[in-house]
Image (cartoon, rainbow, N blue to C red; front, side, top):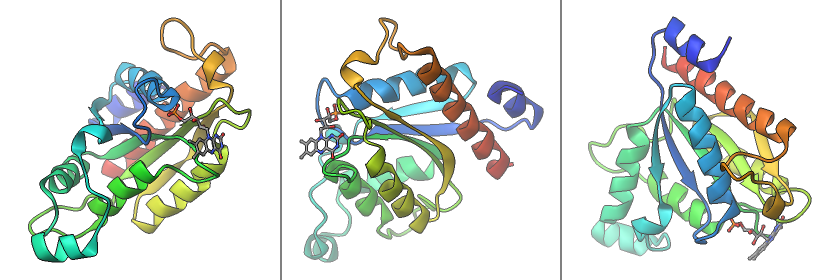
Length: 200
Ligand SMILES: Cc1cc2nc3c(=O)[nH]c(=O)nc-3n(C[C@H](O)[C@H](O)[C@H](O)COP(=O)(O)O)c2cc1C
């Protein structure tokens, strides 16, 4: 059954928040995320694309938090997380880990704020990585999976690490290799099904 058919059968709309752990203008991860977002919308999900660069979050600082509370950008980010059912995340791999931009955003959102609904508990995530290297950034994904699990997110088992990313995209923004495009579509469909099932 397709993700769209499943979603319609259980009559649940799925809202996904999509964001990328790279600040680079020509980011491969941003392109991979865009390909996933296209598939998610085609499968019937409502997707909000979030640009972590525009949030101007300071590096997490406990003194700043205790003196001033969460910065406005962190509160806005937290509200965005809270108002979605699941997350589509693409991260670069830096020395085997996911990016500090992503870690900082996830850390700020994990901090408590008055009258803010749950940002992580009960949510889902689908994970992607892209790299010019052969392994596609796959080594960073278990770390990201663990962090999200610690926060109460159900991380979908499917993940995609796109190697040789400089040659991996087709003109239409999808993936040039048919098997990789199929894997991307399955990842997105699995995430929508999982999210709809948890929400229902
Ligand atoms: C500090 C640093 C460490 C990196 N470490 C890795 C790595 O461990 N594995 C890998 O595949 N690529 C590594 N790279 C290369 C990145 O995958 C590459 O810069 C990639 O284009 C970043 O993602 P983006 O295109 O989305 O910005 C590293 C790059 C930097 C700047």
